[in-house]
Image (tube, rainbow, N blue to C red; front, side, top):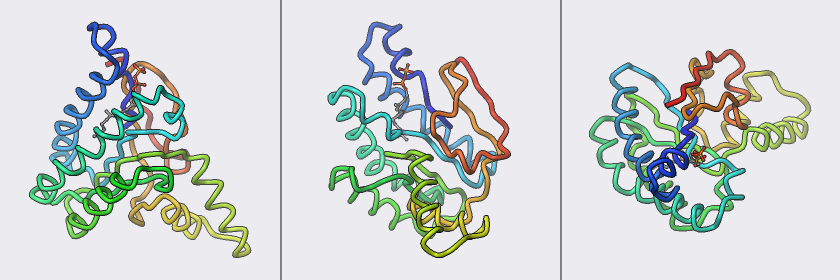
Length: 194
Ligand code: FPP
């Protein structure tokens, strides 16, 4: 899911954009529960794209704190529901406290098997594909399966999540915005104005 439209949602109500993100984070719980009930195997949420570093530093800071708070407060709930947490994307540009929260959530939920909740933070498909392609080139060549393993490795993703069946983007835009480009090769695309 590309969770778009938080800023506009808040601005329409005379609130700061970061309030939109707080409401977006609250909506995440309902989405995760609904997906688990629907037997979704992997749910990936685009929380922070690599392009988002270009936003005002106050907004970036609010998002980083929100993501860290989500991980530290929701991990227990995820364990109870047997939901495995996995954060995909680059980690070398994240603050150390967020990296620690990611590692802790991943470790504590590593044995959960009902659903995998992947949260994309500092994620860019183009960057991941390029990095995996460089690694493939170093080893000669790669089959599609081997390339997918390299890609999962670059992304810190749990392996074998499979292709994306359904991509949802909220907020009215009809674009992929550098999200799971490889994995969406055969995906159904659903765009909603909400
Ligand atoms: C896009 O809306 C949304 C984001 C950049 C952030 C999404 C992040 C959250 C909802 C935070 C919580 C996430 C999790 C997984 C706990 P926008 O600001 O681009 O909205 P706009 O298009 O109206 O400007």
